[in-house]
Image 1 (cartoon, rainbow, N blue to C red):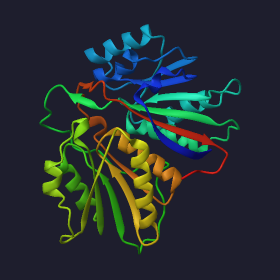
Image 2: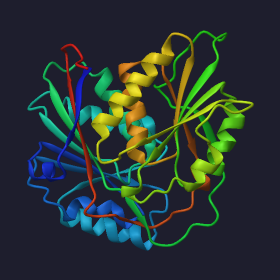
Image 3: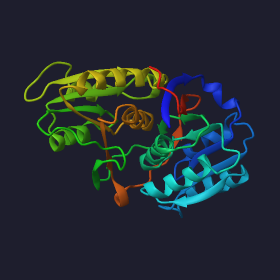
Image 4: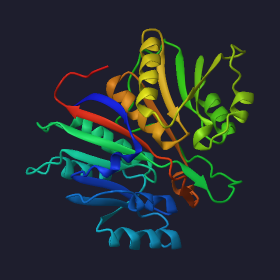
Length: 316
């Protein structure tokens, strides 16, 4: 299917019923935020349940909450791209009464999982159009994390890489998170000739101070940097900015997208590849070294991105 259109929805969009709801049952209390919203009755409710740290107290408590809310729990590894893709494929086009509106809460999902969902949407041959609403509750850290797990995997995301002319220089579209030192490490690994660093706004609890120091908004040696601040609460507009920048770079650069910032920004990278396959999407993951960190949802903040998929022609 083609990604026809994207738009930001009001935060009360969840009051509209959907045919299928997909969420993630993990080891952070943010995972159950969707259960306390105005989510109305839907035909099917499914939650990917992390196999990792399945015996943690928070993970077990979340499982009880999801079962009480009549969700079907499907155990999956957070690194299982094929498993998530297969599950979503079966629900997307079951052969009878396919869902017209799907709600996906990515707040506690692994990037692998919602990357698989986006890829299945792009590959699907179903005839009927479908609307997919992606929900994102930004996190509120409950305790300071002083020791981040080292990266176990850094490289192209399955299904989101591209082969470009090797003699072109690399332009890196880099989504910044809370640890700007890690982003600098990525710089050394990728060695881009040009970097555009994207920062979320303060309204969602992020600070730019460290990023401003490490990524000055000026051409500097040995590599030029540019800074772009974006509003998490308006993902539809942010996507239009990303697509415009990628379009401007495409002719002369190999474009690489990496986000270690908010999960919503990573989602926009996957969608950008669907629209512009020449953009390669990479990820950085601690994998089996990941340390579970309990975070709460920074309610009432909520971002909703509505996407339209079908056999038509994509709209700008």
